[in-house]
Image (cartoon, rainbow, N blue to C red; front, side):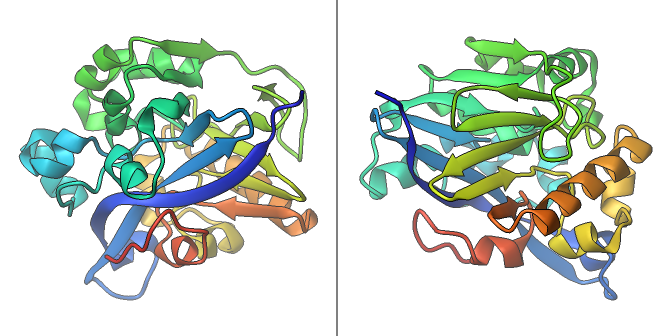
Length: 269
């Protein structure tokens, strides 16, 4: 019997803050931004996550994120805001999580993977290579990589899909799309749920207005591994959303977009 995605919901493990001008806004005061995690329930009872946010330990003790990262990212978390705790409150057993797809391996996207020790973590091969080579200043942490004992690097193939040049079909419902630029192995994740195709775009852009503007905001420019490739990824994701009415684009750090998503529970900054 074919396994399908029965339900998809979204949450965030706390919030972060960044100056508005870094997002291209005309002010300097801090703006709260989420770290959006997708929870995909499948018909065979398993659950797939896209990204994992912060861990239970990091939500309970924010200093464990690292004082430098905590300050730079403006992390605002509280106990039991991790994905596993939120799933339990929503009646979902975290042990059902068999797969975590990482849009990329930055600490705010993969720290919570440690709370799902039985899950396979999937990331692009280039991303894994870059993560092991990079310093903490690039947003990677060695301790996250050491916790990923079931890490599965995948190589995308030159199979165009939805305007993206390379892709990897994980199963009949979930496909990985090449959106490198923010990092060398950044992925977008396309998830088919009935007539809707959700595309979790990770950090391709920080807000939907950045996608439509056709230019990188200061934060995207500052953090991009390759600015030219980041612009290409943005154009492709924007065109995909415009040309295919059944596509819904999700961005990791867009607070306004997050407010419109089907929620695991109510989240307020």
